[in-house]
Image (cartoon, rainbow, N blue to C red):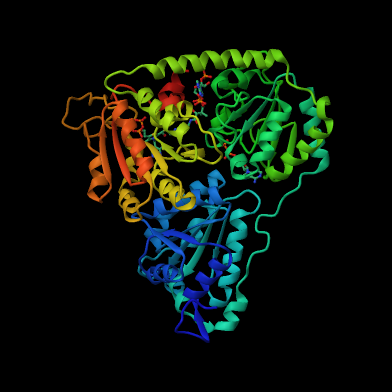
Length: 578
Ligand code: OXT
Ligand code: ADP
Ligand code: MG
């Protein structure tokens, strides 16, 4: 059935795009209207889909990307041509880098004029620009191909390793009309868009054989494991094998962070000491120091070069990208984990458990680190610092384990990651593989829209600035989002000075004592200025209870942060000193 009630026999590009998306279960679009897609946004809403309009396309793109991560359906971002398209492109590329399924649909100018470079309105060869930055890119020129175009985009986004897809829809396409019955027949409901990929039995056996020999095994859970939604089997694999595990930041909560097998609080001990490391949906990229260097003990460590790896990943090309992978298991995580679990269950009591020595040594480090952390968290310094503020957030998440936590910044990110425990899968959403600032409000909007749960966004004051205007969007859609700006007056800290004594402040310093809470008040939300943990606690608890859009300006000691948070060593000057 066409969505345009006026045209019984004829349909057009607008309707076909909408019908094709609806047919494939897409019910929400994130975007920003303008030529040539304004009417498309109106018609999307009229057709009963949710059209969430943003103030900047990058935020709409980030919303689409994280909606994809949370739902396993491609998140859709809709933009205008050239500048709108480019604004969405960072999010599309970030989605691809993070393996989030997303489709950026952009209207584009007339092909005949663009290709002759005759200076059309918002002229740009968008398809060519998008191609190297995403997993796949398509253009649809004829209305009868819309069904195919959308089917291809969906398959490309969610099958295999998920990623970003670009779909170029030139302005002329929308008004092309065709017979409604033929139009309907041209649409495709994609069958099995993300087919299971069953691992080869010999690959599973090879991995199990290696695991059986391990004296000090370790499982690393990455965001691919969170994405796969194989939560029960992953938990069973961890618990049946008794192997300690390390969650990457967005895998926190896949098993509750207070699980006795979590080795998160002994990270720097377990990475170099483990003899067999099982990577489940985690790449050995910079976040794991490429499997090399000091994080893994360095060249002088006794285990250097002797560590063995099992890697479970849907991408057959991931293995050996940084170090030798002794037992790659290629397939979807659900199928791979269940195959391994089958053999482990069959072995029953015969399956070897890690030695008491290994578990005891980890426990010793963990206990020490946790006690040290508890001591720091118990302090109540004035002014408030990251720890005393995050101690509040830790309690709030513990009391509301279904709340979504969005997190970006440097210190505001790193301290939150280690202080705030997560208890449920896919609740922690952060800067991911690129460490990119600007995901905050887009992720928060999508998390609220997709989950219906309260969202708490813990934001560095710099990080918040990248998407801060979306507080209007949060108010407009009356979303249960509580933004906590950890305001330390700048990037990393607020104490840098201009060495020349000139009138400009240092590059990392912002207006001192800024009142971010007023931004939320400007649009009818609740703004709170919090200078103590008690004020912060009261405000966050009230925000979660009331579900009202809230922004808390949490005043943090401007001396409290460190350069680049926990990744100071990546700064060129620090690297030179090493
Ligand atoms: O084992 P050890 O002893 O080492 O201890 C570890 C754990 O065992 C322990 N731990 C625990 N102890 C006790 N209890 C518990 N529960 C527990 N859990 C853990 O704690 C330590 C640390 O554990 P962790 O975190 O697991 O381990 P570690 O070593 O840190 O892990 C390594 C990494 C690499 C995995 C980890 O550090 C990580 O995930 N890092 C991500 C870093 C990241 O992505 N940072 C963001 C980018 S920084 C920079 O680029 C910024 N920019 C530039 C910019 C960007 N990014 N983007 C764009 C578009 N433009 C520009 C900017 C502008 S940040 C930034 C803004 C910064 O200013 P803000 O105002 O926003 O922020 P503030 O800094 O707050 O001012
Ligand atoms: P983290 O940053 O948490 O370490 P990464 O983004 O580096 O995680 O790694 C995620 C990995 O998960 C990617 O290599 C990707 O191919 C893989 N992946 C994503 N979804 C699946 C899935 N359903 N099954 C198997 N592997 C997956
Ligand atoms: Mg800051």
